[in-house]
Image (cartoon, rainbow, N blue to C red):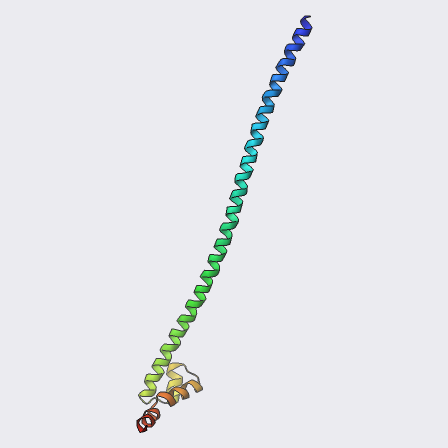
Amino acid sequence: MLIYFIAAFISLLFGAALLRFWRIQRQQAEKITALQSQLSALCAAAVGGDERILRFEQTLNKLREHQNTLDLSIVSQTGYDHAIRLARKGGSVQQLIENCNLSDEEAHLITRLHGQAAKSSADLH
C-alpha cells in the first residue's frame, strides 16, 4: 500500500511539473509571437523608410540637375550680356569670340543685332 501511495505522490509531482512546464512553454510561445509581430512591423517601417529615402534622393538629384542648368544659363547669359555691351561699343566679331567665348555664328549674330551697324540702320527707320 505504501508503494501505491509513493507512486501516486510521484505521479502527482510529475503531473504538476508537466503542467508548470506547459504553462511556461505557452507564455514563451505568446512572447515569441508578439516579438515576431513587432519585428515584422519594424521591417515594414524600414522598407517604407528606404522607399522614402530613395524618393528623396531622386528629388534631390533632379533639383541638383535643375540648379546646374540654371547656373549654366546664368553664366551664358552673363557672357551674352558682356558680348552685347562690347558690340554696342563697336567691338569686332573677333573680339567677341576671344573675350566672350562665343562661336563665330554667335559673335556675328550679336554684332548684327547690337553692333554699330545695327544702331545706324535703326536710326534710319
